[in-house]
Length: 135
Image 1 (tube, rainbow, N blue to C red):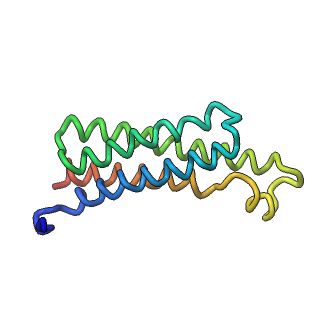
Image 2: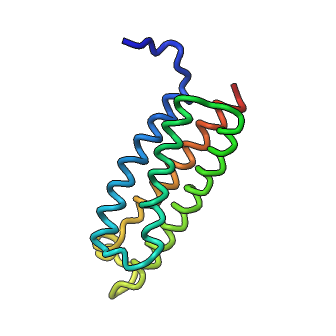
């Protein structure tokens, strides 16, 4: 058994972030497949999620100054993409019959999933920053 005593929290956080992006990507793929990928923007989290998964796992294994800079940039792109996705989903809900009603929030595209993509990206940025610049 490997001792966890030498593992700083940011290393565990980055590995967790990578694994979480793997699960989020599967869910996003299934939901966008159900939506028949009718907009090209639906491909971006499906294709970019694995990049963030590999990034999180890779930074959890080995951190350097260059990798930390790349991590901040790539997770930042994920943060902006998630926020953009939340706006797309919000706009799509408003286009349903009767607009922004509780039923349309339930039946329409989920607001939480792109927000989770953004939140996990922000968490990854925090872990990278903490591991590379604060320690």
